Length: 228
Image (tube, rainbow, N blue to C red; front, top):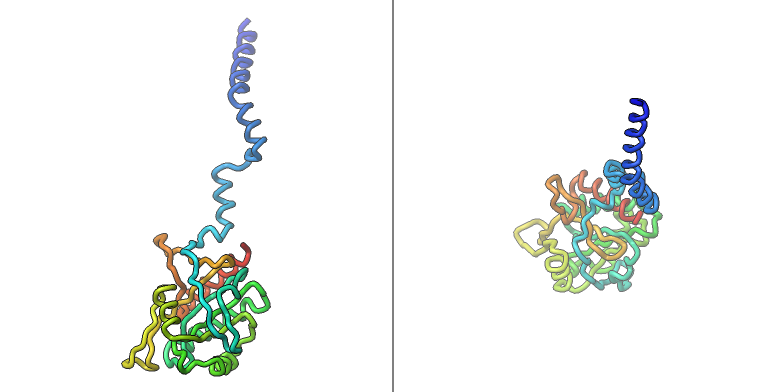
């Protein structure tokens, strides 16, 4: 008699469990989520490096002349991930280091048609297309997607200071007569400025083109954007 009551009790528990749990299991199966718990979702998300790259906004449009005396606009870079810098050919301070690091970046992604570089001079009076062509040759530029760009000075300064918010200016008191940052801008295939976050979760906006870590970081993030 006692055994019969035990069987009845167990059967009742199984019945209640079935009524409660079976519909949920069916629902998860129908939505292919039966194995997608919170822990697994976190593991999957950790492999998606692009999730950490912030979209700052659309990169400013531009149209300038390159080292081959050809008009180049932002449309040239549509469908490409590219890095953009402001420099000048006679710079005696930070530009040589920036250019050398940009060559390193070029070499890392050389042969990839979906990657490019834009180097814009802030001394267009001196940096004519022919000067920039010789400068590119000296640097060892191999990529056909690396453009050295020149044009109207006011246009370029507005593009840098107001468009990208990357400071450039003239200063007769500094060596070379110009001052500027050593920052690199990273733009994705859709023309958006992208960047990673710092240790406090804030967007870094631009990458330090003078620092080994900055160069390493931008190379990692270029690789991630190329996979998008």
